[in-house]
Image 1 (cartoon, rainbow, N blue to C red):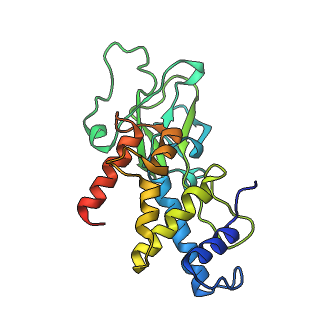
Image 2 (image 1 turned 180 degrees about the horizontal axis):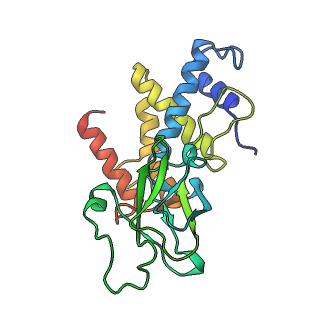
Image 3 (image 1 turned 180 degrees about the vertical axis):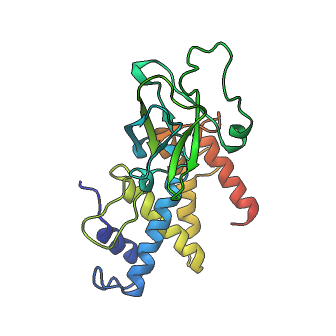
Length: 248
């Protein structure tokens, strides 16, 4: 079965919500509301962590005499809040160490006795003069030539349109089992419709029964990097408990 496009997703959410579907692309209020709900749900799913199906692999080249690489051609698709990796150039094993902003400010600018004092050891996200993201390195490339780093990053989930072209990057099937139920649950909860609690239970599971729900199983299969050493299903259960305690 082919993955559902934006138009079909809007149609299905309108049916679930009991809204008039109208004509695709017409700008009718119900379709706009449904499309917004789907895109909000899609972005929320993408923010659950570093997900394998959103990872992109490419190369970035650090020119001789420079300590940064502008990535303006990639920046619209890069999620800088997620895990990214710069592997060592020349096929060497390992990767440059990433430092966040706080650690970057106090990091040593060089390492005594290191073999690579003519090339970077650390990197971080920065901003160029035009406001576009760039990769900043801890030292200038003085190796005598350019250095090409295999670069892996997580892309931003594209915004869907009410058409028969755009489709989510989610693996096929999840648009039916995860995206649409999540959008429906959130819309019904916000609007005070009945039934959202049941959908919420299916998605997030139940801590007492040990069921991690669809989100827990989804993360167990597709999280690429774990910020928390505990299993992903445990993260979902803790998030669910936090939501309940906060009354959300």
